Length: 425
Image (cartoon, rainbow, N blue to C red; front, top):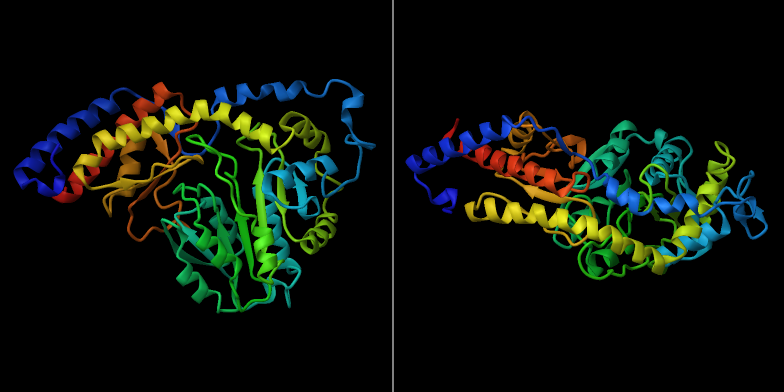
């Protein structure tokens, strides 16, 4: 293959005709394939469905002397708090166990910050003249939607190969109206980046002007390798405490991509002071989360080591799908020289950087050919990517045979959109 940048106009026109014919052939297949969200495949859900049988008798419902079927234990069963403390390498006293979605607790943190303030807030955020959130991007679109929902000003922070641009962050936090930052520190959504030790150190040592500046440390993929061995990760709770700001960080994790995406458990890890504060705050709206499900997960997952064994089973399903994506991109797109991407070793996504100015067109072409992707630009604050050059690929849900078809459509659409741009069509 010859790079498009090396072709003359006649060669580009010939290539355009060839690619357009292939695209029309793809459209004629009448596909209906979805790569929009990072949903576990049925095969993954099936391989952990024996979790449904771990509790058979009334006696199985007891965590020591605590009956999980009854009221109480708002911060979570002792065994569930101990399990998450083992996973995140922190203390049980620093854990609050939630329901199926960690996103729900993240939203609750933001909501309470606006209505009542955080532990160190001089006033509720709704009484500030403006509230600003730092948003490393590309990032998780649902994080940004929470900020948009509460009317925060979202500030774009570019992602580097080591994590977010820390020079920019250290400058922005000098503004007392900057109140929060969202990050996915391991196998970031969607770039698949693991933050460097230096980036993590600088985050923990931030000196924000706002006394209630908060970091949402969404460690959603802390155990989610599909290539290679488990990568240990620093305990951000301890690092912030050592830096003199123990209440600055709220860490989240869940079993959404370990057991059942719609029926798992989640946790928030934070300083003991924050756990005490939010246990009181959450106690206004609930008696407890589903403790029967918490106990079911503890009995099934057991501990971090056993959970990592389960993740190796997930990897046998996930790895071939990511290899499929990489193979198509490296064979069909890499030699043409107009796009690049990240080949992660964990997480759930592939970040694809198209020719600038073509991502929305690629998305539209895929849609018309029966392949659904996350909206172009969704991984940026306010869904606005000034370069229009980013798409998120979520290969987990389709079987490999369907993924092969989807990647044929995607790579053909990438070529067609690039040629349209180059030929001003």
